[in-house]
Length: 303
Image 1 (cartoon, one colour):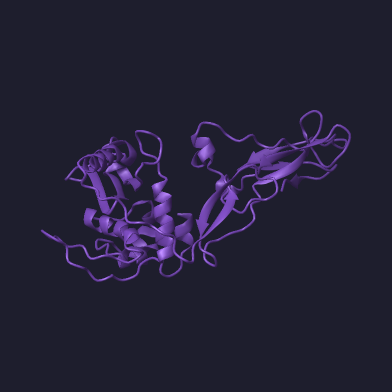
Image 2 (cartoon, helix red, strand yellow; image 1 turned 180 degrees about the horizontal axis):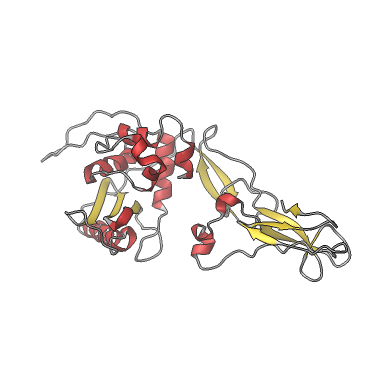
């Protein structure tokens, strides 16, 4: 939703229309809920959108054919070749539901669960094929069991594995990075360029001049006194430690990979000093930002 809210024209609604989704209601009907699966789409339409990645960003023609497939026109461009390449690379890394590791040979796939558990979806690309799996009721009634990763994804991979075991997957065509795509090291936790205190980096793709890129400010070095409290500067018994400072936009800890793994990063300690007469030190944690007194008689916000 954050990305959808920042799109101008074409926005997400325009993008879906250009890709051939034909059952959309008015744009005002959805608002940002369209990014959460509020619109109707057929299996054929969803398959065509995934085929855009295989087609270098162009919308392919969908036809029923028996026998050798004739050549088809390139189609209208919906995405850049660079964006299509990066999206496929991201989807390739999605782990299989049964092994917890990315598929080998690669499968670029994703799941979806519609509002009210009406549908469970799994769609993806393997070799030269696009595969879409839908699980639901024909009368559109919901079922709590209709969860994409739990219901549709296992069936999706049973089909992929069966086709490969029968030798029906000729394999992927060689995929080369477009000329305007570059590789860069980013902070593994924030996805931004690493600052001096980032403990781990990973390599990723970006499009120069297009992809947003900035120096990470997630990891910050602060002073800690002998009692384990935050100090305002260097001094006797004071040492430095690096903490993660998550902003309000990262408030939902369950959305972060480290939290999904069952652990939460330690919050930075509060600043503490002896208060002036009649004052009491206070500290609170709001969305990962500490509001604490540091200098006498003042109340300050941590960076």
